[in-house]
Structure formats: C-alpha cells, structure tokens
Length: 129
Image (cartoon, rainbow, N blue to C red; front, side):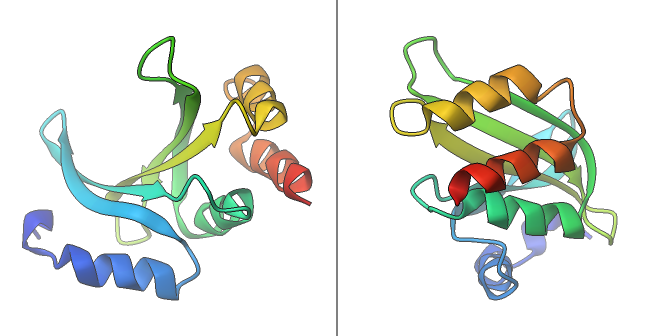
C-alpha cells in the first residue's frame, strides 16, 4: 500500500490512543526510495522516555542514532529506526534539550552506539523519575 494514501491524521490519532505520544507531527517521508512513517515526539513531555519504551514494545528496532542539525543546536535528537509488525518502516524522533536535560543528553551521547536500545531507554526512564 502506498503510504501517501494513508490518512496521516487518523494514524496520528491512533498513535495518541495507543499511548505512543504525544507527537508533534506524524508524516510520510521518503528515504532512499522507501516511504517511511516519521513520528516526532513532543520534546516538552516529561514522560517521553516512558513513551519510547512503549514504542520499543511495538516495533522491531533496527538501530538508534543521535545527532543535531548544527553544532549550535541545543536539541539532540534520538532517532529510533525500525518497523511496525505489519512490516512498514518507521522512524521515531525524540528531542532532548541539552540546556534542561543535560544528564539525558550526556547519557545518550555516551551510550547510543554502545548499548542495546532497551537498556538506554530504561536508563532514560530512570532519569524521568
């Protein structure tokens, strides 16, 4: 099925209903010729790591990477790439503000490529408490 034919608003509502939000945007993007659902989680949420843990229960995670758009950017984006049980690819983007979430940003930078995604996310959940 062509993802552009999907009702993105309905998908966004389903994400919220399933406890996988709040999301600031849900859209279909194309990466190397493949249509991918991209979900941007709300960076101001105080429970975003807990939300990511629910995402890890739902999707098969391929990898996690983190980065900034520019060196002067104060937001680190944790990108979780994987696929839905139906086989459709998804990228979940989770922003962390280095000014207010310095401990989380340091943990992500130190661990994102060294530990299993569920271990990193559980450590982030601990910092939410």
